[in-house]
Image 1: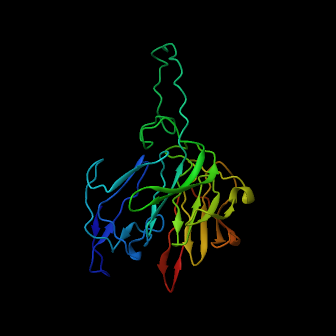
Image 2: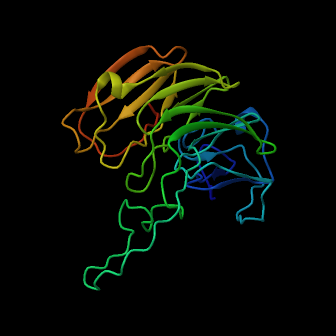
Image 3: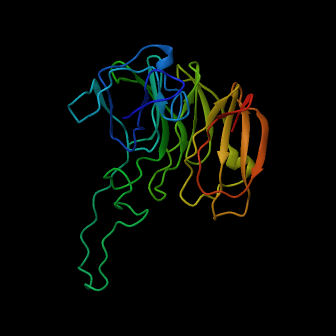
Length: 281
């Protein structure tokens, strides 16, 4: 966490890091309750990972230090939790069904022996949490109580989970306006829920516009802007189709604009920049 001085604000801006691949979610002892302290989507209310409203945050954490509560999650995830009022929402796979380990094979010749782990393989170094697989096959949206960490509800967003390089199929972070929460799976399926967990609509971009062709899986978080849900699809080398943006009516999931074709890209996240008199993507 870092305090960043700015020219336009007399107060410091506090940088809040995302939670990545944790099996337990800890919340610091000082939790602001004002509307301005909400963290409604990936990189927070300003879209830059900072806030000017939070005070007296600790600078260090451990499994026992500066935690208000801990809640074990079903599996690991690269998704960032979001916060609104007394609710926390996060994207995660279900619990993995761990099978018994197979009997050890006969020792291979030394020249051919190779340890598992490498890029994208189970147990690979630098892939995130120490785990043997991607988690369960159900992709879930969880809602937790902000004060206690108690799970309020969980809903299935999509099905199918695998490790693609350093993450699984739950990487995109949700986004909320305080009444509804929108989440996109690692396969690109977008779903809207209300705060009680009732599904309002779902939309399947790969089903309508063609299978995604990402090299490392899909991880772009949706963006909420002026009543529209913006979804970015940056294809990799696994397809000849162009990358695109689509805009959905956030209330009912109808396509408002798109797909807007873009140049080929490999990785990216959506952000709004205040350019001129209107915000630009």
